[in-house]
Length: 288
Image 1 (cartoon, rainbow, N blue to C red):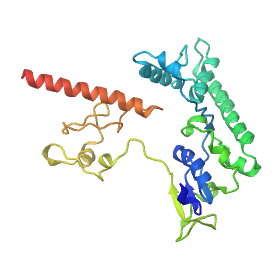
Image 2 (spheres, rainbow, N blue to C red; image 1 turned 90 degrees about the horizontal axis):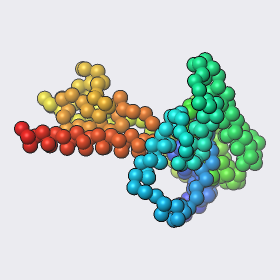
Image 3 (cartoon, rainbow, N blue to C red; image 1 turned 30 degrees about the horizontal axis):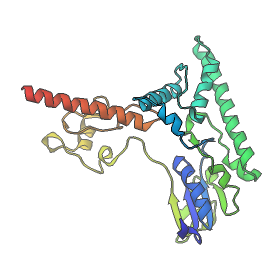
Image 4 (tube, rainbow, N blue to C red; image 1 turned 90 degrees about the vertical axis):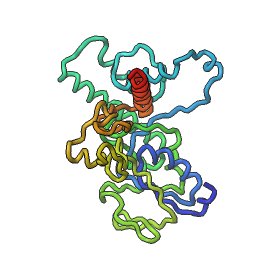
């Protein structure tokens, strides 16, 4: 990062990747332009050193129990204890205060969820006002949508970075994003921002890879490529993992796969499932 001391940097994108990068770039660059299309929600992260005495209390399986507890909370399940206790599960637990042990009609639930959502988003917008000193900058950084319309983010440094004199937020929403990139500038709303380098933090496509898009051909029985097979037969899988005529291929977190706020949870469960399938296949091959 020392090499950025005399550089003007443009960061495009303020999703989860941008949230992580902005504090470091803002600290080290001569000037940082943050080009935002839609602001993210930025809640308290509350990162703290792990207490070694707490670690001594852990028993085998603690990680899986915490992970399952987190998923249950964020999925709206009625959970007695919060084992994670972060800002994400704190927001999820709010739902339980509105559904105290008895069912409500679908219509009533819809309005309650909307009220809860408005409460959460107001708290997050208030947080922007409490941290960002410049009023106009704060207004640009406020998210105006339902809580889960974008992946929630958590940082104790992101919003604070916009109080630095060398950091500028550029709202591109009214212009459909960045209009042009020239030899030495990015252009937004007809205005050129001269920069020395550009950082693309524009996100990713969930479950899409070169294999599933056809850019990286994978061949099965009869020499047919996966993408070609799907074009002829439709996209079909077994549990999102296996594809007929591709016996040695396992597609992790791909089409028809489960959705979760915790990608690593899905990958771990799929890995266990695939391992069990391979073990069973080996067992049966020995019996044949």
